[in-house]
Image (tube, rainbow, N blue to C red):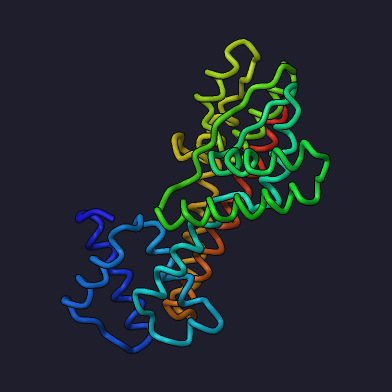
Length: 260
């Protein structure tokens, strides 16, 4: 976090402490901010929310260590699991295929490749998963996000498929995909570009989708004011936004698949 994040952080921490009937002083807020400063604001805010919702730890007032634990859990979810990364590594073993993977997956693949070359796929998988989990844990502890890159295969059509899927999954931006496939016709309609941009945070959602979501949001707020507690409203707003995001992601995937 940076100093300009302090007010938003302080509001979230104050709300959380009031939730536990434990008002926090300005000095303690500054102490929390200092101890959590190495983490991005997004992860810290998520850490506070995840702590409140934890069935066990959420029964107790959070300490810095609790927020750190949940912030790291939040960051960890941005990475592929070891099994998902192993599936990517198997693709990388075929030079005709294109694979979009991370530094950590490539490192783990290098560690298991000698075992794979001996024909021991079970041992190779175990070695890969152990090396990958170590590398990702280190990256999370250093607050690093996944850095995806592309290993291009010989199969031209396979390149387009792999890169298009990486765009739909948020691993690559549309601009980067176009740079990798300038002549492959990775084009989308304006609607597809809007949704794919939403996935990467660079393009606004489609106007009709945004209007529909805002309409539902206003209807919900009007109905909730008289009957819901602040915590219930926050939880249900988060669910409403989650459903809206899922709808947009689904349409982004369809828009992208339609261009193959």
